[in-house]
Image 1 (cartoon, rainbow, N blue to C red):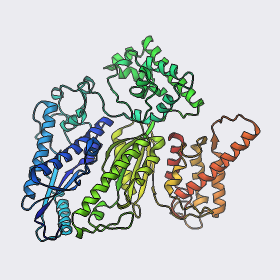
Image 2: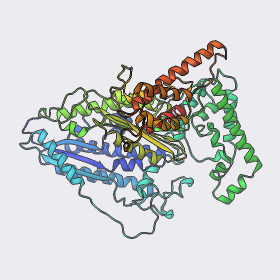
Image 3: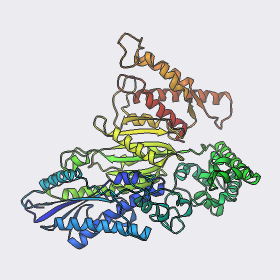
Image 4: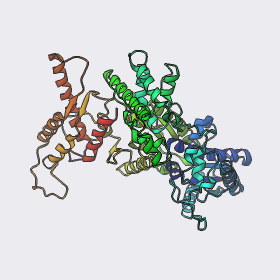
Length: 632
């Protein structure tokens, strides 16, 4: 682009996107919200190209195609428009998107309804004239930031409806106006208009779910192992058959929640029962699912009906039969070296650092290069193409790890991943980044499949923000929330740093954390949760106590002595699950050597994850112990 290009630069932004996406109750809601945003952005691109002769900058021409590409279209569209037409084109695009959303609302409710505060579409237009592209870009970004500080308030008058259960800034639709095609078990939910559109997006008349549930993702590694051993381990088909028969007995069979097939499961074996395991069997493989009181409440419409059902001998027999089948299957799989099904999965939030500075030419890519905007908009078009390629690679990386992508735009990604492969997926997405782009930070939140998805999403984004606050950004915030509500988190840099001691390997603290994932290292080794309390009891001598302590208040051990104390404590709390080699003297010696090696690596890793001049980071230890217990 020349310095005197007779065109206008326009930027159209969809605001409030992350909030709308994370205000989701189910994975299907989450996916639908992402698709709604992507479809709006896609509509904007198509309209600008066809009706206004736009040359696209973000996304660049040629990077689209197929449903996967639409999922990755950014929520900001940048284009060059013939001179004098920028404001006209941007305004027309905004009106088109608002009308498109209005048509979707009318399709759901069969009437026109307002949705104040969604979608929020903002635009700026900058005539190039004698400006360079770099100058126009800077002015557009500054103008858009100023535009976002001006809020359009459209508040409805006094209404008596309850607040929306997902978005309390909106009022819920009253019961009389709930969409007629909503399945019966949803009609009692208090949802705003915008969230009803999200809830019913992409579903058929039966409300069939089009995205794997949290328990389906959490249990994927276990179900994959069951299907893999189906024809080779006697007893597996029979136990799954018993599970199926119990789950398909009334009233459990009337469960209205439909499941789609979870990606990543083998095609074989065939048959009705394996197909059931791939789809609706995900929740039933957990022994704890088979709880008489909980299932009685699920299968009835009132507490009185539940009280009657939970005393029904036939119902009790069905539930107990299912629980026995699930437990016996788990015991058989454990005997075959397969870990019990993990109740946890993880939210992975990935975002490129300082993208705004990079696009302005002020920030560097991983290869230390900067954009030269004096070359014109082609520089940004190349970035857009790199982002599209990165998104494709990251999607494949997540799926290889058994996860599912909510959205992938190249500069950001949101995915749900089984617990055992979550760190692997985070690393793979990082490595899939284009070296010409800046490094990225990540938030990784492990949570119980029965816990609040919305809380998990918000916590993952909070971890991402904390990872971006460390020196140089390029960090990983990782934490967990158990079903009890107990939680912990820590933030670690992706890059290595020097440590005390004999180790010469400059590994990253994240590498040290990965040691605690059983599938990645020493799968037989277990760590007692009591290790933490013992480390904390010795912290005054290992680390010198709290920061407020005086220099001579505690007798601090020399590094080499303190390290030996730590290793002794780790070894005391290390155990090995039984192996297949029997209990002879040779295997006992091997076990002792394995425990010793594991304790050595754990000690080094805990020290590596601690802050400088310290040996223990309490939260990092908590996260490490969680991974060793649950990421399996």
